[in-house]
Image 1: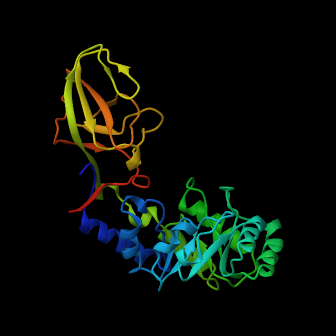
Image 2 (image 1 turned 120 degrees about the vertical axis):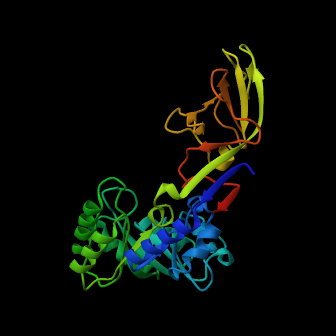
Length: 319
């Protein structure tokens, strides 16, 4: 194995169950790399929480079982997958007349959620655009089944709840609301304030990842050799300026491993950050360890500092 994710099974299982119970009417999110677990693994767990599962794009919707319903979070572009590659039950997101036109051009008919623009200012209609958007949805033969609000990451659960509440107050509708980035307490307060509305919550990162202490990400050392000052190494023929050890780690860009911030190596050994010789390549990262520092040997593993939302482990160990 090379890149390995180790998971405290009992702690993770408790966290997922407790989070799901605290949020109530929950639509679990399974998108992208499956938060480091892979989408197939999380889909299996998500089906135990809800029949409705949110996915990132229309091209991920086929992962949802045929007896479930896929809520697609990102509006579609001009190209849709073949009908036989779509989930049996699918709900798409539209936030502009252009999104509706893409569905019309593709001759797609079905259920949609209309997205309202939040302070993140990404997808979604503002209030002045809402009436023509609703009219376009109806004219295209689409069926609206809800509203969506996605606050930014910045801010607090309380500020997110305030923004969501203000949005709900400005829309006269009995359709359900699907919201995110709000904790259980503020969600309960929001549901109490709008007792005549159905407020559902999407959760992905908080649901699946939670406390980082449940996880350990490591990579194998596949090779190591002593090198002298002046040696030329790597894809880019980097010249070394001191003696030390050249260490090859079995993780790279194909695993989603990148620099931390703008320039820091993501690899650590004996609680010391290892220096990259050059940016990681597909399946290998080369690090240089000076002679005055303990160097990992072939067969050792090193810690990998990466967000699980972008890595693709070769192996998941459930401890």
